[in-house]
Length: 352
Image (cartoon, rainbow, N blue to C red; front, side, top):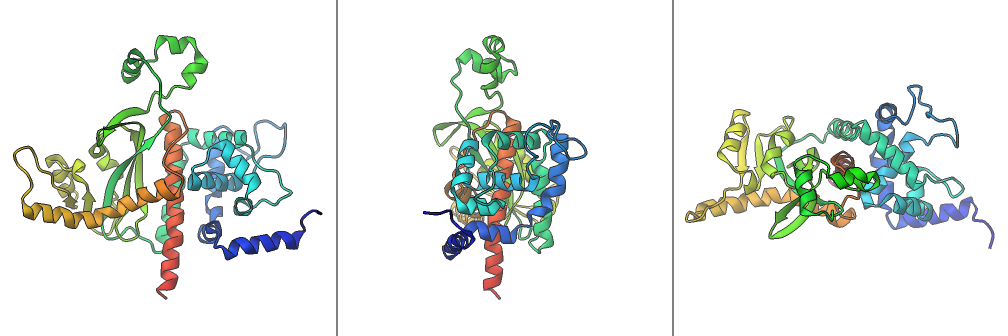
């Protein structure tokens, strides 16, 4: 069997198109060149490039195109792949090669390269700027934040730490245990930012992805990342979207308090936060009916988390520290919005 020719490859691509390759739709909907300027700036700020765009070391091959690497990071977020798995899948899958713009004869960025680029973007705090840039593009396309906003948080698991009680106490106090200091390699493998929390009687270790979506388009408009132990309501102010065209705010009962209600009223926002009963004072039938009505709207944010969990390979992060977790979670939210744009564009075409 000879080497595959151009027409053989084209035939295989046509076969992928016949099966509705979802990555083709994302390529058509998202102008990735939009991100080039911010990526270049971030790579300089993150220490991977000089101010003239060249690498700090002249050894080895030419630097990878920043947009190509960014597409690879988007793929990672779409399927929640590790760096090693991303390298393997990029070598193995035609759809991935086509998405990033590589041919069968081209070299593929290895796992270390992906780590270095993502680390530079992390050091530059670039992910929020990239996320906001795409949000501006969505608004320019007519997808304004409309209909009110829905706020919620989801736990993002991280690798569990096998620490002693004394070690955990030191970490919570903001200190580094003495035996970790003596073993720098071990210390680098310890996540001092992730925390334990309980939900529905089960213990979870990791971080939280706090999001605000707009009711109309179900797009993530703002987000924040914290350790899993931070109460949802503590991040309300950080994720409220002042740009939403409507005043309604929906959230579950974890956000309900007199202080929150007063803060929303001061900002001219109308609370649709679930009410909750207390011991000896359960909700009356009218309040329960009102909660059911609110749930029909609030469920839309669960669709976002469900997509990330079921369709995007899960929410688990394989990183250490909140800075890297923020980068990964921010990319998950950005990749979700790219997927959502495809759905919105198809709906617009179907509606005529």
